[in-house]
Image (cartoon, rainbow, N blue to C red; front, side):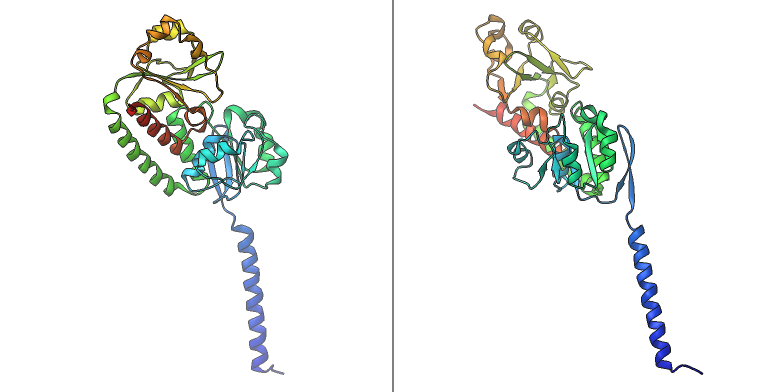
Length: 307
């Protein structure tokens, strides 16, 4: 006995709906594509376009900021104001502890789909981080300017923002060219950026982040070396005798305060020509990145153009 046509049509429609649901389910299960990201400790398979990102160094916050993104978790050393100064505004994130010792439990509670770690600080906890989420380890603390740009591009690939990174780096080059032009009268001057504490003077050489960036602006680092940092006393500084001194400090007293009555200090070219500048250590040595480099450049122009 043949079934009425309308019953056949209802059955066919039901079968089509069921097939469609099955196809959607299969699509949902297989839609999460992965991107292979090469980094300092190998290759990680990262979800395409990750949204919940945890950063364990400040330069990675800068990189995401340059790409128009914000992390859900940051190793901020429990200093919200530092992150506000880095990004230029207050953002909503969870502190995951210090950069030196990030809190793995807090990181896990955020359910990240990507963790960006510093190979110098976090190599020892890489396996633990991988158990929480796909992790890439890049150079930050020990990176120079060029390595920082490489890390920026790697991060851009990992978060699906390669086109935006190309545009941002093109803009960065234009900004750099303008800064070079504004500093053309300073071109070739020898310079030493240094972190100065109450008991130490750590010069940043041509291999350091800020030392290399200042050379991009047209200066010549007074200490050409493969090592990024050099502890110096006043006699050693006097032997080098740079044209410009940049002293980075956020902690109050400077060792150089004790040197001010010493003839070796008073006879430095930078001192005699009034080209010794105290700058914000966070910006100059900690933030590191495309956005922060431009801020350092503008800070340099401002300082050297002051009457």
